Every structure is written in C-alpha cells, then in structure tokens.
Image (cartoon, rainbow, N blue to C red):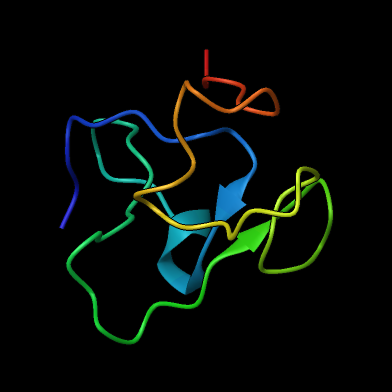
Length: 68
C-alpha cells in the first residue's frame, strides 16, 4: 500500500493518518473508495478550489507543501 511518491503534507484520507514501519504515510492512490481531504480547508478541495486527491495534490499547486 505504501509508495515512494511524495504527497502534499496536507492531503489526508482514512489511511493517510497512519504510517508504515519506514515512516511513509499509507496512502493508496489505487483505492476506489478513498475520500480525500485537505487539512488546510477541511474539505475535499484545496485552498485553490481544486479537488484534493493523489493525482492533483502535487508540486504544481501553489498550496503544495512537501513533508520533511
């Protein structure tokens, strides 16, 4: 379930609050039942009004913050 892909610090889904043994958030971009939320807005869209999901929450968005 874990991947090496880096997601926005503020992207969450039900499993996205947990971490693997290696410390990666457990986000499964292939899940057909995942509902994503942006922690900045507390809604399924980011501050720019674009949906929060694994495809859209990348470095090309002004609100993106990579985990450190």
